[in-house]
Image (cartoon, rainbow, N blue to C red; front, side, top):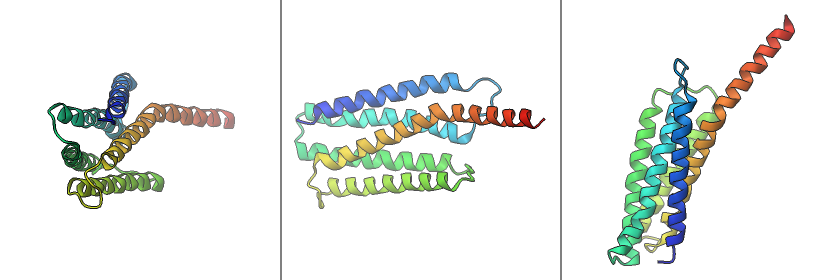
Length: 180
């Protein structure tokens, strides 16, 4: 299989980001500190999606080791991608059900992320059914890249949001001190 190196690299990156997010999440929220729903969902997305991405990036390697043909490997991998994407889309939607954001930009980003996920599900359904795509690596690889991009985006938010909150708080305090 010529794509094995890409899959293994993807697996390593996904596990590393999920691990770092777990460490940051553990130390970031101090006792008595207010935890926001967006931060909790972001951490869940990074850890869950990162680890599941690692799983479904190794699935083709497992199938190849059992002597499965390439077209069957990519069909099964695409089906598993659809199942995983659908489950995590549902899980995230449920977790965001009571999430209130007043910034239009955040709402647009959330909707765009879901739309892209549904497009990837559709592409992988077509790949698994041998429609338009011919049970090939490309659609499956797109799903891996998107999930890694999502994990990295959420990881950067997890890392940087508390810093920006603290900075805004300090700037607000400085303005109040200057007015007095």
